[in-house]
Length: 223
Image (cartoon, rainbow, N blue to C red):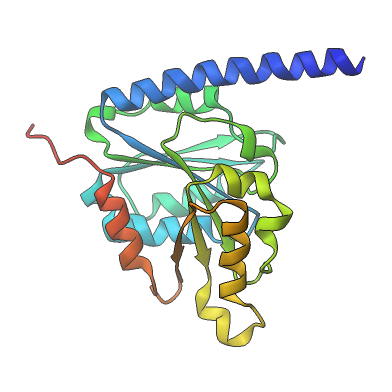
């Protein structure tokens, strides 16, 4: 029975990876950069996206596919900050998005007019770590309220991410949180991880984040 279970899981992952390759090719054909934002619940993905969409969403021609287990509350919040598509995927209890859901979401987009696609994954640092969605990179968020050892507890997620965002840094004066140790723990797992330090509440660190995003987007075509 154990062997059969492993075989079933392998087939599911193989199918997902095949769809992810189609998604990646489709995005590349239209020069769309997609980032898969992952974190534990409450780390601040939606708050960061709200500030990002309001500040640079139109300039970067940003679109969003957001996943949640039961509600579309996050999508409703983000839709207030952009006229571009914000599509909600209700997973019905599943702890992560899969590539087929992203592929279906692309059908609602005019990719020729999109420069940047944010995929806001389900709040979970375990399940989404191994699922390729066709993104250019995973970006893992963790807040200063979660503890410096988060990367050591969830090494696969931090190993598979290319970028990390330390969120809620406005709370640092009120917490016993060692930023240097947190970054060192993350680099122990993934030495190449690039960090951003942000506060969606005060705006601290967001300019560097916006500049990074602008570097990832193709110039606007002439219509």
